[in-house]
Length: 114
Length: 111
Image (cartoon, rainbow over all chains, first blue to last red; front, side, top):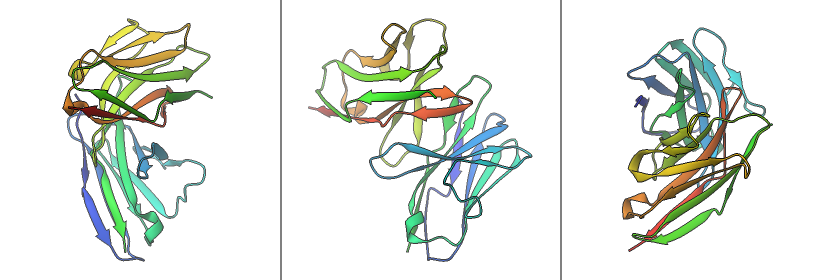
């Protein structure tokens, strides 16, 4: 199956700093990637759709200036949490969409903002 | 808009027993349906998918699911549970290129 990686797997930062999370499709090209947020014991919440070479599409209620998404190549999308605050602490998961109508997910990044 | 409902937020079975995780969808058109599994502190792993071919879909780790249009269901089963099956399971439907997830079902397996 298709493999998606995320880096870092976990990060701790101070309030007010920015954090960048990378999502890579390792063995296939993905014109579309997705970013999700997951709270403990809850389902995934779609934050935004990342399209290679164009602006990301954000879901309602997601602050685009806070969660910057860049899809610079067919294998890499990045999510930057700007001026992070404790309420941004969460588990962030990316996925990449293949031509087989299937999304493959990365292993997730746990963010803790102190 | 399409939606997915997973009946039962928590299911507990004994090792070796049948696993049945329920998923119902709402869709006016033939859906693309998926089951994913999530182990603690990990991403989601695709178990199986239905894309309007065979109604009985076989996946990894011995799981299978049957698409029943009359019941708008896509329940996940496994004949014999293993301790390693303990995880969170998500049913999802594809809508407009996006996955719509159910709330998830936590499966516990007792020795």
